[in-house]
Image (cartoon, rainbow, N blue to C red; front, top):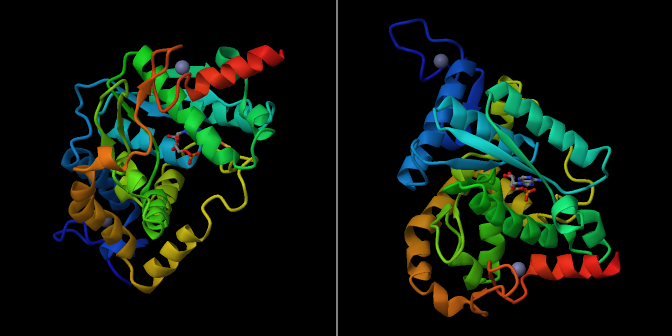
Length: 310
Ligand code: AMP
Ligand code: FES
Ligand code: ZN
Ligand code: ZN
């Protein structure tokens, strides 16, 4: 059996329990945790995402990705606080259990968690929006993005981080590349600076696969909610994610290379022209003053619509 590559050569190397095909690395459990956190630290530094002196806010959904991110950042000594948005999904089950997972994690880390509620603050939850559209995930995503941006600024944080990981990033890159969606591609980078009313955003897990994250969550016994959102459409990440996995199985390391080469070789070319790819210019919402592609912005429009109904 292969031996852990990181156990010290002088000592008896432990048998590897974990093999990371993309990195050709056999590891014991302790060294997997060590590797995972170092890999994260390298990502944060090489993309200049943030420093230990900055105020960092983790968007915590209660799922494994964001809990892993919060745990690993804290273990590395980054002083990160959490924010959870109650989306009002099946009150007594999904949103409540997600909140409990986020709260359990905050207690475990001894870090503050801000609790926000869409219904309390804006007068509607995601189920109400479901009645308006069949593509609830993209509308929900847009609402969450705008709401999190507002919240991070209001709460005084310098950077907002989310649990998006390599599988998310590589499969959405593939999907958008197949459609030559230049507007999207020109904005696809793991850290986006604070500008024009947007807080700085970062995706520190962008070089970690879903499997690595799952393993970290299990070994550290994190209190994550395993179930996904009950409203998510079947074909949420249709076959791009599957295609990516098939490529990865045939040639391990493809997913990471595909994503990193894009960032290194293609992104700078597209980003230099990003204004030209926008189909709508960025405005300021006349109602709330936030950046938006329309005025009033999405949140103000929805808020008004639900206020008028009640
Ligand atoms: P998703 O779009 O559900 O895959 O979520 C992507 C990322 O958004 C998660 O890893 C979290 O960082 C963040 N996020 C999703 N849902 C919530 C929520 N209810 N509250 C706070 N952050 C969230
Ligand atoms: Fe957004 Fe389920 S979390 S639709
Ligand atoms: Zn080891
Ligand atoms: Zn607005």
